[in-house]
Image (cartoon, rainbow, N blue to C red):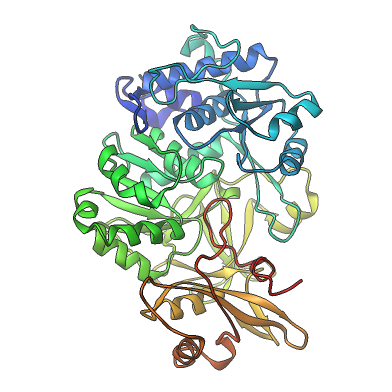
Amino acid sequence: MSDLREAGSLAAVLAAGDGSAAALLAPGRTTLTRAGLALQARRVAATLAAHGIGRGERVAIVLPNGPEMAAAFLGVAAHASAAPLNPAYKADEFAFYLDDLGAKAIVLAADADSPVRAVAGQRGLPLLELTVPDTAPAGVFELPGMPATPPSAAEAADLEAADLEALVLHTSGTTSRPKVVPLLQRNLLASARHIGDSLRLGPADRCLNIMPLFHIHGLIAAVLSSLASGGSVYCTPGFNALKAIGWLGESAATWYTAVPTMHQAILARAERQPEAAREAGLRFIRSSSSSLPPQVMLALEETFGCPVIESYGMTEAAHQMTSNQLPPGLRKPGTVGAPAGPEVRVLDESWAPLPAGAIGEVAIKGPNVTPGYEANPKANAESFRDGWFRTGDQGVFDDDGFLTITGRLKEIINRGGEKISPREVDEVLLDHPAVGQAVCFALPHDKLGEEVAVAIVLRDGQAADEAALRDFAAARLAAFKVPRRWVFLDEIPKGATGKLQRIGLAKQLGLVG
């Protein structure tokens, strides 16, 4: 097999490296080698062609987490365009996303009881029903009409093109209609290599994937970055805090990547099994997709005995933009690190770059960045200029070139003209020994416009009331930043990817109509 760094397309990456090396693994399954994964991807390509699906045409994938989802994504993305959808969607949601994407077919487990079946029938969309043969290695599956002997790697290479669309996702659409984000093969490969370089990934590395594979974080940071560096992925059925420590031991993983709420849940279990956590032997832990509280980062490092690397990513960047560094490099709690792939600037409202220490909007430019939103000229005009993309995040560089995200611009609370970063309030409250989670958010106010509210989850066995936490916050924050509304919960509502979401939280909690 050829050199991974020279591979110019997804199909070439899958065909490169040591063909006998492990690629995909899963609980209770035998290992799929790189050569086996490359063959499976070519079989997927031949099947799509037999169903009349051409290069760049979109195939929705509605599968649960696991090796089949990982292999289906890779096979479709290498030869058409993968459109992974959350299997938990309701019929109306499937209808919206399938129509918006213009999907040509849907990959679905043959035994899945999903509302997407009826939606597909209404639209005349073919269902490619996936089955897994008994004793099949992790990631090997059958589709209707799938050939046993697809075109060779050399023949498939004639169709490869880095500028073809490989993946299409939607933005979260928290405050507006979700935007369609097309990503090209070269965007995905650039981001995967940026991640691999940041984490010094190699053939000896194995990622334990617990992230959902309908999201950019799991698809690129866990799956593609591992394979593009010659490593392997242990594909779990999805996040399960009770099983995570056991999976780390079974998988022989050298790292895992997750969102902060997952890290907090794993930490709560690991603190009860400190020996198992240490014996996992992780080289590092990665965190991304939302801000990791410094308290959680330090606790993870102490519990697992390895560095925690916080990175900054988003869908429009095919995930990674900045990253903290592995030792002996700098690792700064509370920051998302230094530029790690694309160029990164902090801009003022007129697109002029700001110096270190000045707060503005984060912008990026590089080979991993989407060419633009689909069919959305207004959003493109607002967000793209001269190759630069405005992220919608507010941030500031320090003198070492490390970026701190102070919040989403849409999440900044405007209390009578005073601007408040919710993250600052979170981090102060997390220093209280009784607080396990804190999420500050805006609450509409008839006179001030917005008031400061916070949702609190107390630690097991700990007690604190509103008065005590208010006094604690007042001793550490300016008076206008101290929350006026306190909500105590057993669990804070999360989005589909496990992230805590500030926007819309007031409505979710029944605080507004």
